[in-house]
Image 1 (tube, rainbow, N blue to C red):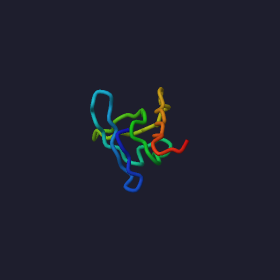
Image 2: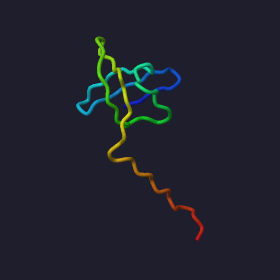
Image 3: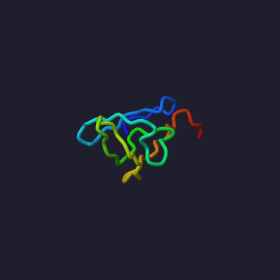
Image 4: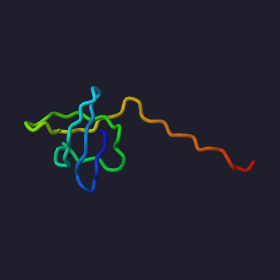
Length: 76
């Protein structure tokens, strides 16, 4: 997923080769994503108009690592 706007119910999917496809909330097989979804992996097919359909969020092979907070100003 490149992004998905929960309020508007639309977003974009970007593939590994750089292609982008519009996606609507109704195109998700189960439920549209909530919260941050940029970078999430999905599978999908295309309709006649070139929009994503049957979209399913998949598990990430390498989940993002949390950043360590800076220790600046920490008292010893």
